[in-house]
Length: 227
Ligand code: 6PG
Image (cartoon, rainbow, N blue to C red; front, side, top):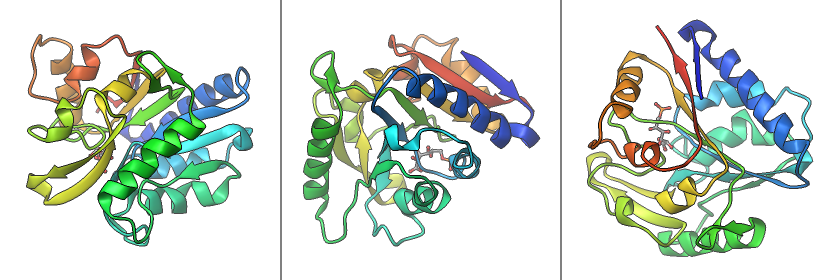
């Protein structure tokens, strides 16, 4: 599904679509499991979404990916989403990084958290009702960057992933668990990203990691700024 809007109304438009999707889920489920991406694009959208009157107590929010930094750091996706969204609503939320955890311990703990809170479906992978994704101008999504080890993970739901070009240690959901979700919504703001999306649907092969999702049977919706 393609949703297009002017860049000036992108945040309000995207928040409205997410609200509608969450309303459908809350009307048909007693517990809803959502994966949220970090980065800059979604933060103003989360800040609008928090003001809608939804049954937030039914929602479990998980991180799609995280920088391996303190949750007090401005680089922390969890901190930024907490400040914009989580602290304003009575939902459950699960950070990927906990103070004092080594990265391997944090990964193991998150795999366990997914197994505890999320039912499995298909190949014993956790089933997210909805995953909100961003995309970099290099076609990465989550923390699945070109040329990194995590791209090849076909079993685990969560892995650590060192990203050389950013000199950044990340924790990320993997392709198997993202592809297993009920729907992925991808936020595409800006001309460069929009042009990449056009390519994704015309090319059989692509260097862009997100292309792997496009070629799968995952239900994908795109919220795209058209100018
Ligand atoms: C991160 C994100 C990342 C993000 C894209 C787009 O940790 O940076 O999870 O995957 O979704 O990089 O980021 P922007 O929305 O800031 O362009």
